Length: 330
Image (cartoon, rainbow, N blue to C red):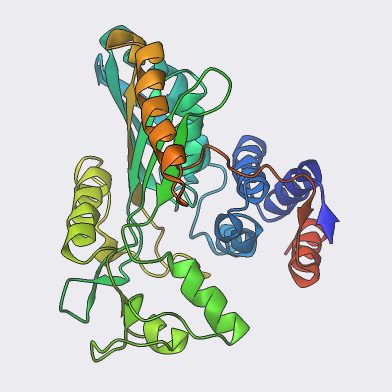
């Protein structure tokens, strides 16, 4: 059925409140859920809401904790999420990080000990809304094997980047360093569909097209050793720089109970006006875009034409689950 973005947001917020989140926390997470649905990122939208609610009840995520912001150096803003949601933690630190980037030309915002941030690009686009380049890194529960291996070592460990423009981002990309996001595997399993070769290996390290075997085995890195190297970089940026946990130390992100995620995110904020300037940056990217168009292929600048869906077509069964979560407190 077709559901407006406003209703997705308000119903998600009601569900989170009903299961124990505070008002500020619920509002920030619901905003992220609605934005994911609006841009067609279904894996990071309503698909995650039931697990958020279940984990609020079990205590795997603290829905009331207030993040702590500190700034020991002019260009470094640190936020301790204190095992709460990532979205309100980022919101608490963003203004200070933006000010730091404008003062220093570049700044770092880190979020430590947080629940999964789900859509990393949700955060970098907020940085770009302030006219700054945003780069983001986060890790996740271990599901990716090293090249030639079979044991999960890294998470899907995404990278996101948003380049600001005068009225919309000039570029926006948000992608896992694994060959595919884990949600693609679980959705294929639910649909009873095979997965392409090159996405995953089974428990014996053999290539597989069976999503169930993949979930009991490991994903592969995108582009082989190159993607593996980027995944390792993300692990350092997310876990090493924030004093948060390794991917190896986080159990499945949607498991109903267990230890808090405790994940880290780090963001680099760059002020174009402190360097070449926004006009030059836009000109250089336009030069590339024109060359792509002249070539006549299917290439494009990532995110330049992202969808903005309103209303959103939501599967009936999913919306029924979301509506029930909003109506029925545990």
